Length: 460
Ligand code: MV4
Image: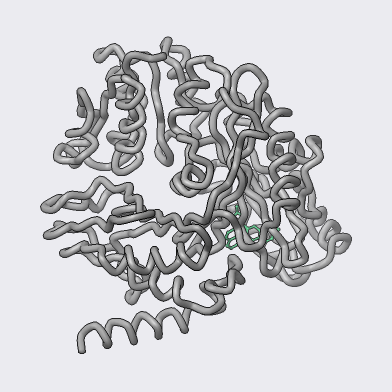
């Protein structure tokens, strides 16, 4: 096992990685921007290196500075966390060329799955269902012909995109004609790659993703699904496991397909296969994420597997020490991402000083957060304040526990998304397990009203 690693990230995920390192006797080096000098991940680490000024571009994304930090501290391996350079194949390559171990999949794997049209073709080769659609479109005429074949509505997607960037739907040929140009231009300017493909547009899918783990000895297992249907502008807000829409038989099929895809691409490390789950129970490959994800704790709680520990072990060349039949799922877990945003003002970010912080606790509550009383949330990075994760014997207990945990949380001085979370958790559609990716569009007004009523009641 490694003696010392460099953690190329900040906030709660840097802490999360270092916690497992501490348990494994691995020393940790933190990197930080000048703006993060007083951050908890810097205090928690054994050593730290300042890698630049304030913005991400001049600090957490500065590859030469990160490599230099690993060199001067004698770190053997680099963990990228999520975001920043986590899915940057070029960075992974540079890490390896400089003699360090990359805690993640091989650069070629990251690159091939990063091309969404190629990933779709790979999924099909692995026997994973894909949405009816096309490969890269050479012209708008080709798009129109394909849409006539598939039937409207259709969705244009940027092959270099993912996570919803550069998507355009079209209900007819006229709309498709216009969408093709705007989507291509948007993709070209955002990713330097205007290539598009097209899919049948599913009306009300759920977002269900399968966690996988793979080692360098050909072992691949899945750890079940997470339902991440509650999103706003492609930012997940609530995640849960198991999905209310997934039966044991469906889980086994989705899991086996995720394993087949990971096996085909010779995957190593933790990864996530994202699916769209249609109302009729059909599921389709969407994309594969080659990083540890924000919502990984819900899977950890159901399975008892420390996903960061497994990432470290397989990166060090160890074989997985359990098999698919050893993986069991206990109870129900829910995560709420508490952001420094005001949901009653269109989720307007509100960085600033946290005058008082009190994390919820008690049975079945986990809080992953880098906050402390007196900490100032900088405006330069994402607005995640804390992940509150609860576990219950069943979904009803988990929901009640989350409401209780949110109610006892204190984040004085900054706005939070907690009123929104409470409105979601108490909404009948969510409680019945019926929420799809359209939940906010369909019920946003009711959620705003519920938030308003609750704030009035609290003031009275
Ligand atoms: C879709 C879709 C409907 N039909 N593809 C959004 C993120 C990107 N990974 C793909 N996305 C979608 N692809 C087809 N053929 C609907 C979405 C989508 C979505 C997916 C997951 C979670 C939230 C979403 C919100 C809007 C649209």
